Image (cartoon, rainbow, N blue to C red; front, top):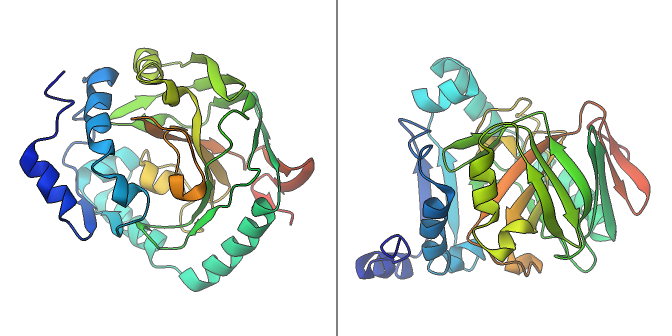
Length: 287
């Protein structure tokens, strides 16, 4: 474990002297880490957190994108050619038009205090008081298409059930995740599959049981879950909440070696309320 928590001098030098970070992800096997315990995966993540801080806080530019491979296509349940069409369709859209729509949505959330997410087995509230969001319209990740915030750390109250899609993280697919929050902290957690990995990740450090991100999917080119968070978190008509570290450039104070995005479907019986007023229902905006 000591080795996992140590970054070599040559790797530290490489990271510190990089002017930009470009990640082209082309997996041959997306489940290579599926048998590695949560504490070992998190130890490596924790060791890299500080060296990568300039990129995570947007002090240095970065960009990441998938290259269409058979492994990624299999995860999505598609032939390779169909996955290629999907990937390019999610990237090659009118970003200026989408940016304008997203900025209008962000203005509404920036002006609000309390967010409430309601859906099947879900009724969760949290605060965005004093926090501003970021519009990602092809600014870093490719594809873009989300608005995201760091919620006030002690504000989450209620329950959320991720019954529609598995929560994918570090080669694991955890099905049927359910959380109960009190005072911003997850006080009860369960899953229908791979629960040991879920609980192990929550126990990695204190910050892993708090929210680091609230995101709103807005990309019209993404309409189905792909078992790939880079795409799934931008799926139009969904929201995602990440447990773990927040974004300091957005006012986030939570720190953790974990940042695990989990996608919640709202197009079938879900809604978002801002300060008691419904602003989205069944995935359709009512602004």
